[in-house]
Every structure is written in structure tokens, then in C-alpha cells.
Image (cartoon, rainbow, N blue to C red; front, side, top):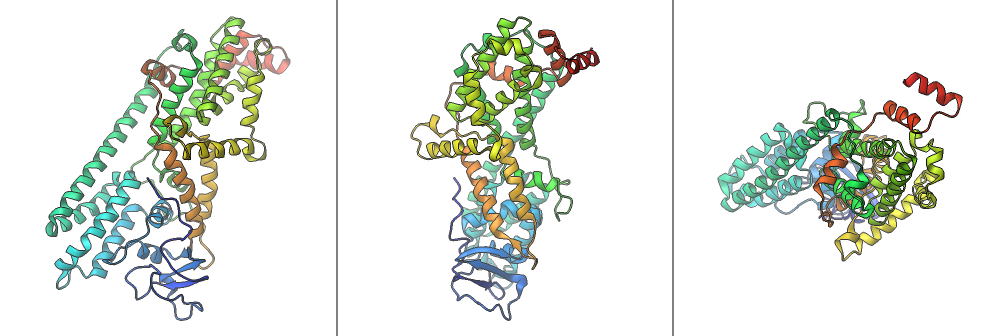
Amino acid sequence: SLPQTPAGGAGGKAGASGTTSAAGMVNGAGADHENIRDGAGIDTELALVYRDGNLVSGSLEALVQHMVPTEEYYPDRAYLFAFLLSARLFIKPHELLGEVCALCEHQQNLNGEGGKERLHRFVPRLVQLLAEWTETFPYDFRDERVMGHVRSITQKVAAVDAAARQEVSGLLQNLLLRLTALERYEEGLARLATEAATEQLTQVDITELCPSATVLAQQLTHVELERLSYIGPEEFVQAFAKESPHLETSFKDMKKTRNLESYVQWFNRLSYFVATEVCKHAKKKQRVRVVEYWIETARECFNIGNFNSLMAIIAGLNMSPISRLKKTWSKVQSAKFSILEHQMDPSSNFSSYRSTLKAAMWRSAGATDERQRIVVPFFSLLVKDLYFLNEGCSNKLPNGHINFEKFWQLAKQVTEFIVWKQVACPFEKNPRVIAFLQASPVLTENTLALASFECEPPDNNPEKERYKALK
């Protein structure tokens, strides 16, 4: 598991505030020398700025330098995570790894006289760096250019150290397993999309397939946690970079990892699925039963801590083809629904939901039972929050430095997300229900509107016009 971003910054011991020069040092750690306060004579290209012992800014060069290990120095784990997460806004992973390798060779003088002995002493640091990178950002290694550097590191290591050679081979084995699992998952998603698009609307009713709303909420949680587990932390940054043409790095030439986008699509699918399940019943009594069933499922999702499914169900029941069914709603026990809507009320930037989420996080942190550990955040809001943090990360300071305070903030939020996505779903799995949730066909916006008018005819002019246009 990952460390929380420490208050102590990135291993620098600078005083109250000031600049630490990395020039003339083998790495950027402000480790064992006095803080230089006036900044005179400092090469700002290789300077890191600290405040209250925390790293707050630095040039890209100095920050890269700070992650390069030596025999005596190894970068703080939290620094490494924060930097690898957000540096991709300014330098691509394969370029970064290339620079790190070149700096290691140069600083350790690995090609000079006695280079082999130095390499032997230095190898454990290099292997540790590779291990942490592959563990936290495995999807970076889908890029053939990154793997090119990895192969050259492996060859160097193999030549001097048999134990390290075994370690590297184990590490690459684990990486391969994770990337293979990812490919299988992506192929599975593609199959689900094809199935849902080609099948006819089914007469099977979710309440017959899964009579218990509690069990349905548990199956939804299985889907959520599986999809969440495949999202790489770097996807939040890369999704932002794709939309920001001014950034130095563009990810167009990198292998697409689209788990974040397909998770957002799952939310939309679930909302349409809820609406479809209501509208496919011609009889009012059955629609009432289905609406109440979904309200009960939403309540169970709330109790579990599955806020994403909860929000998707609320969104589905609030879609206009459903909310306009006045005769249906008049028979629904809707008090429970109002309570849930209040919990997820968007006013004051979702303040009710944010306090509920905090409570769920406390519960999860102190949990002894796996069921209490579940936190599935309302994902679109998390993405929005991270989007604003990304914006802060991508804007350089007036002196050209990278704003590392923003890197820390983003890393802290993404670390929370990593804790949530590592929870294993403790409920019994029902493959039939899960397949139905993910692959049964749903109505489109227009066919849903049409079905709604057939359930309850239009009762005002705008609705009559819309109905006419749809027919």
C-alpha cells in the first residue's frame, strides 16, 4: 500500500524557507547541508525550493535529479509517487526513464574505470526504483519505448549481480501478469459493449432475476469495485492532458488505456438501465413495484458505501421519461427516495455527500470487517475535483518552476483513491445478475421517451409535440 504524502515533504531538511541547490550534488536531496537563504550564486535550473521542510517547487531538471538514486541516497517513496504521477504533464514516462538512466550512468561513472564495481554497489538502488515504478504505475510499461529502457537496465544488472537478476525477473513477471489481466479486462469490456448493442430488449425483469434489492446492491458493488480496480492512478492526469493542447506532453502516441472513460460510461449505462427497467412495463402497478425496488436498491448501496451506483440510480429515476410518470409516482412510497436525494443534493458543491463520504472514509480506515472497508466514490465528482488540481499542476510558476505543492495535493487525493480501489468485494457473486446488469440492452434517449409516452400519454403541449416528433 502507498504512503500518505508526508508533511515532511520529500526528504529535504531545509530550514524555515529557502532554496537548496542541487548543483554539485549527486542528487537533488537537501539532505545534509545548510539551507542557502539568499539564493545568491545558485543555479536555479538545479534548485529546489523548500518551505517549512516541505518541497514546494523546482525546475523539471532539479525534480528529475531528485528522483535519481545514488549509493547513499534514495528518494522518499511519497516524493517518488507524487513526481511520477504528475511529471507526465511535462515529460513522457519513456523520456523520464531515459533521463534517469543517463543521469545514473553519468553520476556513478558506470562506464569509466572501476565502473563494474560501482554498478555492483549501485544495482540494489536501481532495482528498487524500477520495482516501485512498476508497482505503482504498471500501465506506463505498456509503452514499448519504456520497455526498451527496462531491457537495457536488465542487461546491465544481469551482468554484475545474480541475486538482483532474479529480483528483476520476478518483478517483470508480476508486471506481465498485471498487464495481461488488464488486456483480458479490456477485451471483456469490448465484448460486453457488442452484446448490449446487438441483442433485442429482453422481457426478463430484474426484480424476477434478483428479487432481493440487498443482493442487487451487492452485485452492483461487485461491478463497481472490479471496474475501479483497473483504473491506473495516472489515468486521471493523462485524461486531463489529452484535453489540454498547451501541455508539453500529448498522449496521442501512447497506448490508450481507457478504463477511466469506460467507468464513466458504466455510470451512464446504469442510469439508462434503471429507466429502461421501469419503462418496459405497460402496467402501472408493475412500474410502481420496479421504482420502489430501485429506491430500496439505492438505499442498500448507500448503506454499503457504494455512492457511484447510488448516484446512477437516482439519476436514472430523475430522467425526464421517468420523472414525468405522475400516475406511477403518485402510488410510490417516495419518502425514502427524498432522503437519498437530499444526501446526494448537488447544492453547495455536494456538501451533504462530501460529509457522508468523509464518514465512510473514517469507517473504512477503522474497519475490522471487509464489508466496512468499502468506499465507492461518486466518480464524476472525483474526476471533476482532480481536474481542477491537475490544472494547478500544469500551470508553472512565474519563475518557470513546477508548482510541487499542487503535485502533493493531487498525490494525496489519488492515494485515497488507490486505497478505495484495492478493496476486495466481500459479497457472494451472482454471475447471471452481473451479466444482466452489464450486457442487457438499454433504450436510447429517444426510445425511452417514446416508451414513457406509451406508459402514460402526454399531458401538455410540449409533451404532445415531442411525442409527435418521436413517432
